[in-house]
Length: 364
Image (cartoon, rainbow, N blue to C red; front, side, top):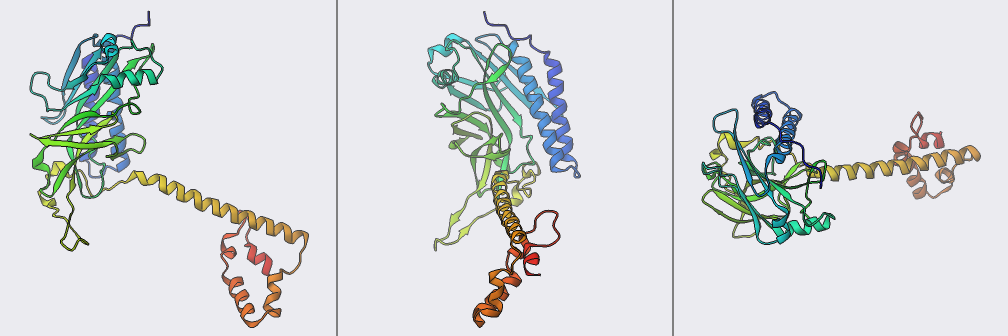
C-alpha cells in the first residue's frame, strides 16, 4: 500500500501562525514609513503561513469529507475561511459532474464558491502520468486582500477579498499541486464584491495573481455576471483570484476622444489600496531584453575596437580615411573631418582598462 500522509498538525497552532502573519502585514501596511520591499516581504510571510496551514491540515481531512475553518484575526471582521475537500479516488475515476466548494460553514459565508469539472482532473492525472485511482484534495480559501499595495493597472480598484482554489495530490512524501492549466477549459469562480466601494464609472472584471510575474493579470479569465454583490468569473487556470473595478471608457460622438467619469472621491479609504503605486512588473521582461540588446551592441563595438588595435600594432600605418582629409575633394574632406570628430566609435569603442578610445589612438 502507498505510504500514509504524516499526521495532521494542531489547528490552534496553525491558526496562531496564520493570524500572526496577517497582523504583521497589517502593521506594515499601516506604517507610513514602510517600503514596498517591506510590504512585499510581509505578504510573502502570509503566503508561507497559508501553505503551512494547508499542508498541516490536509492529512486531517478524511476521504469523502470536507473540513471548514473560520479563522478571525486582528481587527474585528477580518476572517480567513478555508475549506478542504478530500475527493475519493472512486469519485475521481467516475469522472462525472463537478467538484463544488464554498466557504459557508453555517454562518452564511461570503458567497464565494467554485466548481471544477472532474473530467479535467482526470485529464490532468493522465497528463502527469498519475494513476487514475489517485485521490485528490481541493483547497478553497477566502481571504482579506493582503496585497493591497499591488496594483492591477491605471484607474483600477481592487476588491476586499481574494478567493483561492488549489487542487493537490499526495505523491508518497508530499502534497503537490496537480497541474490543471493545460487541460482546464473553464472553471467557475464566484468572488464577493462590495459595490459601495466601487466608483459609479467603474465595472468589475476578473483578475488572478500571476506567481511568475508577481502581478495581477486578467489573461485567461472573463466575467460571466455580476449580481447580488457576487462576481462570477470563468477562468482557464487555478490560483488566487480577485475582483478588480476598472474605469469604463466611453468614446465621444466624434469617435476620437475618450471620456471617463472617474469619481475617485467616492472610493473609501479601505479600497484605495495605494492606487498611486502602479507597479507594472510585466514590463520587467522588456527591460531585460533591452538591456541585453544594448550590452550586445557594446560588446560587438568593443570587439571591433580590439581588432582595430591589433591591426594597427601589426601595421602601424596612417589609416586610409585620414589621407582623404588632404587628398580628397572639399566635400569628402569635410565629411571625413566631421566623422573623425563625432563618430560614435570615438566614444563607445573603449576597451575596459584602456584610457584612450580607438579614435584617439588611431588619429593621434
